Image 1 (cartoon, rainbow, N blue to C red):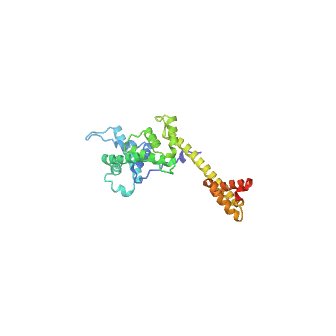
Image 2 (image 1 turned 180 degrees about the horizontal axis):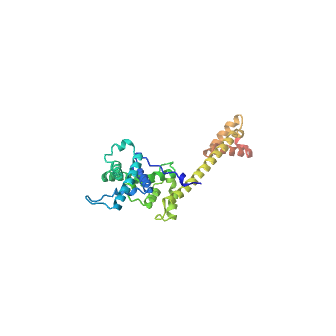
Image 3 (image 1 turned 45 degrees about the vertical axis):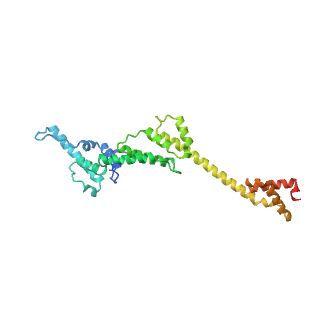
Length: 275
């Protein structure tokens, strides 16, 4: 039975160079501690020369204590070599803003990155042999990056993109989805689930076809090994094969084994071909 004393504290997200992902995790971590307000607004400051009341003084002291805790979390999350490049470390907000400026970039840089992501999203296509899960992962990764850079990305935009960029083998499935669903209300998860079901069916059919092909080739090989029993012997054999070649030549395009089986049955009924 889990008790309060055995509750596992969430790990502090370590900065790994991917600022957008790290900032998302770190913000959620600080919100869970109820410290995010200090990163957004910093410590309350009073006008110069004013005398704080007892309540104001207590509030400021409380904020300073919480700010020290937030700074401690940031110091543990950010590598020493990066911290050494941050000149102003007075408050948690100073550290956060410096990281944002260094790794997220200015408005101009973000706009350029968004343009590159838009182009990547536009030309994105499912690869031959790629699974549904893999393609959805690639598409959603780009879509999430675009959202982090300020792009408004509705579900219908992603759904329509996926439907028009599937490989040719999914054409009938795409038509079926479009005709049987309202794309305005169809979610990404529902689309992925539907495509996965069809993908599994196609794989099952492919496995059955391969098994039938192997079985047919095995049966054809066994019939081919016994075909010599239907041929003539001696000098007559040449005439039989020559006559068969001229009279039944087109039949050999269908299959040598089937043709010779047919010739064997013909000769058993009427042996005029060897006279």
